[in-house]
Length: 388
Image 1 (cartoon, rainbow, N blue to C red):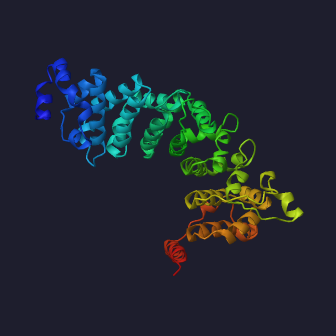
Image 2: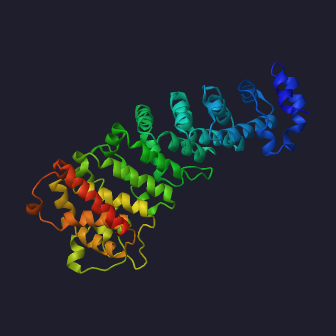
Image 3: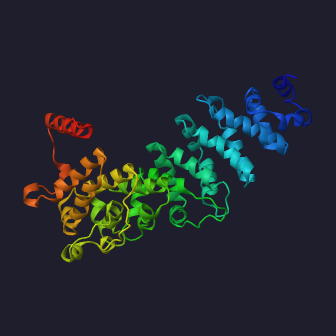
């Protein structure tokens, strides 16, 4: 039997269609499902009201199609994305998870991300799936949220929506509280989405507001996060928030206190003299013998680049220098093997070991470097990294 032809002929008669296809639902392989070549309107009709078994088969078909390099058939209009989200909204179970798996694939492309973000209704559903405490769809929804916020323009749109809906506090609570979801979902990709969202300046401003800012609630994830995805997401968020030098001193002081947050993952078990400890933040004093440094080189690099940004202005350089940051970085430099990170830490150390008289400017970002010197410095950096 040519199943494709049968399904096409049955478009105008859903009940007959269900009766004739039902016996094949649980017998088809993935390859057979993929060959169906179902028209979009047939897929949509089944997703909206088909038999449970048939709906599962069509969801598997959509998943296979969404995993192809060109899934333009699924994204040329809003119909299938909307239908998949509706299936998820009605099924807080494996059926809903299967529906969201397709949207994860769809949003792996720029076209798919744009289609999802076009609709605020889509975004609100995805956020709801991510943040409802009993949601079994949360991990998948968080992956979608991470995908659609990679591009800066889309991150800005999503960030503004979260702010306007007063959803920032709930989002931060879900990241910082590992028992937030009662269905066993880890929500690790929510931290990655959070990092992406800090591309939105308004989102940043809410996080670092000196009165109501809540960035400090997620900072412990940098050293307590079990997964790389979590730690990388929060490191990215902090790095993005440091591009605006006006917020630096605010972030160095309470309630944010970001200096020990940045340094603790870079610190090891080395011991220092009493006088040296006295100037260090309490969080960095008398660390245990089994203290381990951050394992991932990319996260370490984000932390080092964040420290370099903090050294942009004179008041912050003095703050960082006076707390014996150099000693932590000196020991870290002895430990580090990655040449990209060796260069990054040397850039910070080079500033810290110089006096302000030697530096001679308040804001290092204001210094204009001639193109010929810039090219020379960049070549030196490349040669250092490659070992030439």
